Image (cartoon, rainbow over all chains, first blue to last red; front, side, top):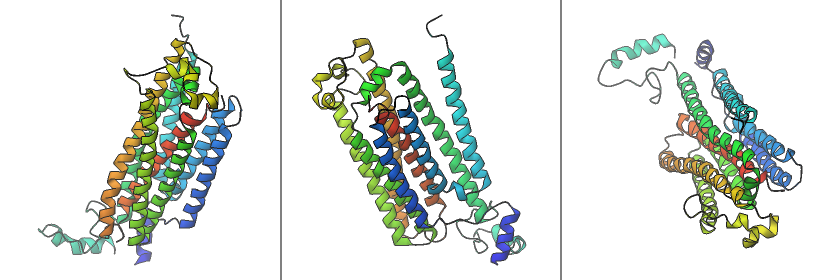
Length: 110
Length: 256
């Protein structure tokens, strides 16, 4: 029975339901808390232009952990991975294009 | 069970008044070939919804970045009005609620009914704690007249010494009125972003309340975890938004 189901699943590009063990959630939870402490600590240090860069880098790292493990994208179908990747890409294009427009206009010269 | 058997057994009943569910679990819709296919399709749909949410919040983040560049001194001074420790506490609360939600999904997957109820209740309570802390922060803004609108006051920025709590920590220089006025844009974006985030929390907490009632009857621990799983995606997404709101609003101008 299970053999047949497995074969059936493979034929249609579906995948077995993956159950993430609690220990993974505990490790990710602890890492996220440590990163939160780290980003608050870093905000007290004078780093000039690097303050927002460090803060956002830690934020991106935390978000990546949440997406991959809490949201289970690491163990999901290729379709889900592609969807998430395409979404982030489109989001970056939107932000990138908007910001490049704002910084490259001749403000006040028309 | 193979498809041909399902069709052979199911065909006579499927056209009758009583829908036969003997061939597949009752939670599998007829138009899906298998539970796995149904789960994949639902997961895909949930992600598409979350992508529209990312674009929606993305617009707010972009507006924040642009205005911060334009009115930089105003944004720095205005962000000094936020209490980093409330923000840090709320980040911890929200990450904890994401953890209890993830554990809830695990409990549903491994059919632990009381564990699932406990996890959902904890997530529910942590969500309320987050909103409680947000209320404390908002009421401080209301008291100081830092809510954009007719009663908005620039006094704390044109004359920082008049606001001793913030002044003793940051020693901000007085700002000319035309720049101080732009702090209102910071608070407008602050309320728009955290308010929209809080609205998502309120919706999530309402759904959690509904789920707790259903979970107590064993609705999610009989092998059908899709609802818990997809709600988990929503809850983690709300957490991710906060992961970016916290440094951008509270932290990046602290040292100045």
